[in-house]
Amino acid sequence: MSIFSDWNHVTFAQPLYFGLLLVIPLMVWWQLRGRRDDNPSMRLTTLGSIKAVNAGGRARFRPLLFVLRMIALAALSIALARPQSSNTTENVDSEGIDMVLSIDVSGSMMAEDFKPNRIEAAKAQALKFIDQRPTDRIGLVIFAGESFTMCPITIDHNVLKNQVNQIRNGMVADGTSIGMGLATAVDRLRSTKGKSKVVILMTDGVNNTGIIDPSTALEIAKAFKVRIYTIGVGTMGQALMPQQTPFGIQKQMVPVEIDEPLLKQMAKQTGGKYFRATGNRSLASVYEDIDKLEKTKIDITSFKHYAELFFPFAAIALLALLLEVMLRYTIFRTIT
Image (cartoon, rainbow, N blue to C red; front, side):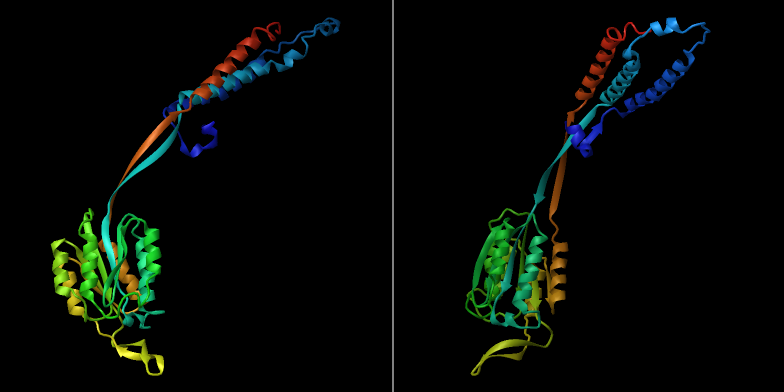
């Protein structure tokens, strides 16, 4: 019986009927009082005649009638209170945001001013950001000298995160084509149905290649009403970076050059915002800020379904009452 197995989902439609339970202690008191008053005394010269009268063992069980009446009253009060089990279902209506993460994977992203390097730090924060956006459709684009769609826009975040984990330097020709990175991301968004379209573009350099220049890509983004958040990645001044030399790969200090005016222009003209991340902590803060700025509207409608549970208690009350009447006028009828 569900009412006995899951009390957390049981409610009572008419709880005032529990007031009937107060009658039980009054009836018990009246029963005990009546038994004390029904003890008259008399003097006899002999006990022989009394011993001859024997009601048998049935008299000892006569209080069972009273117990059955109490059970009937208790079960009836619970039945009248109408116990119900409730089951809640929720309908979630999400006004999701369609977005694309566009990440620079050029050679300079191997710089070690982030731990362990820029590209690994970018991957780690992208994964955390994806987990914070469960109702959004997100895609992934990488770029260096060229751009490439690693994951189309999807709600399947497990597939998306698997692709983020696959990001590494050398997947496309080296260079920094910011225009291509932005244009490819916008192309992923142009036919989507989202109420809001967002590109988060991360780079650590200056546009130096690509068949689409950043200004053209920006105009395309504005035409499709895509909001751009840009992130400049790199410490101020110089950063330690692996470099190919005649003696093999060696780490050298190189200048950090980020085209901040371009990134600010992209963000400003599309209603987005530019961020500068100079380390792991500041990069985490950047994604937290973007998460706060791009809130998804979620409407949750709850429906409660009730199932009546009074019948078992009504049956117990009726059974106890019938049993009392039957015993009173059969087995216990001759007991006075």
